[in-house]
Amino acid sequence: MPDRLYFTDSDEANELIASDPMALLIGFALDQQVSVQKAFAGPLVIRERLGTLDAAALAGADLEPIFRERPAIHRFPGSMARRVHDLAVHISERYDGDAGRVWTDAPDSTTLRANLAALPGFGEMKIKALGAVLAKRFDVRAASDLVPPHPTLGDVDSSQALLEYQTAKRAHKAEWVKMKAGTGSEVGV
Image 1 (cartoon, rainbow, N blue to C red):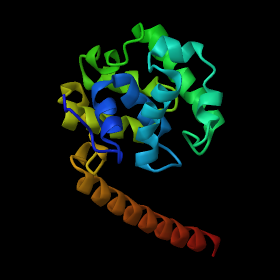
Image 2 (tube, rainbow, N blue to C red; image 1 turned 180 degrees about the vertical axis):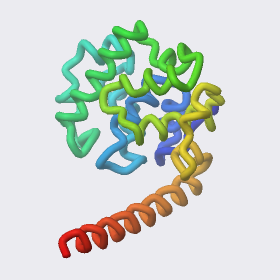
Image 3 (cartoon, one colour; image 1 turned 60 degrees about the horizontal axis):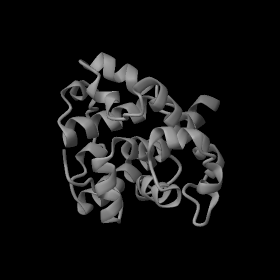
Image 4 (tube, rainbow, N blue to C red; image 1 turned 90 degrees about the vertical axis):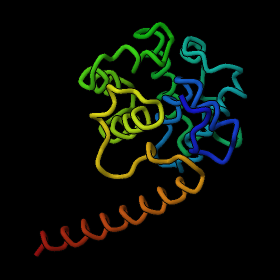
């Protein structure tokens, strides 16, 4: 297990997401429509405001005020508070509150994929991204088949690597948008 991941500008947040599986899952749940840094700093902010990241405590709490408190934890505080709440309920009920069991209970990639797909808000992109992190940073063998061929957060092993990853991701997205725009105009002809 790494002593830190390099997904935020905060050493404390980076250490938390590396050491607490619930924090890692929350970070991935929040990783949409905000920067990687903002998403993965979220678990630390939640812990600071609520005092814990215990799944049962999160499942029993009204998270929306915590998410809306300034600065807001996410660009969409209401929907993300519900998503984290639903994630905590799932972890509490399915894994007795132990988020790490999502991957430690998986004997193979098929089971791990199913476990990840069952998490609220986890679609194919998040499954592959988290799979890459689990395989490359945590040596979870069941995750190795989930690693996509393109760069992911699993390849981020330093602050510099995060910047390079984000630059490449923006370039890839711009190329995709350009291609889609070209395809869309041709369809209309």
